[in-house]
Image (tube, rainbow, N blue to C red; front, top):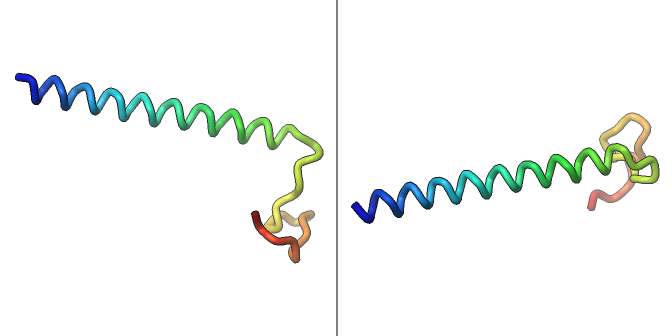
Length: 54
C-alpha cells in the first residue's frame, strides 16, 4: 500500500514540476518576443547571420 502512495506522489510531483516549468518558459518567451530591444535570431531573415549564438 505504501509503494502505491509513493508512486502516486512521485507522478503528481513530476507532473506539477513539468507544468510549472512549461508556464515559466511560456512567460519568458512571450516577454522576450514583446521586447523590441531583444536581439534578433541569427536564423531570422532580418537577423545578423554572422552573429554568435548564445
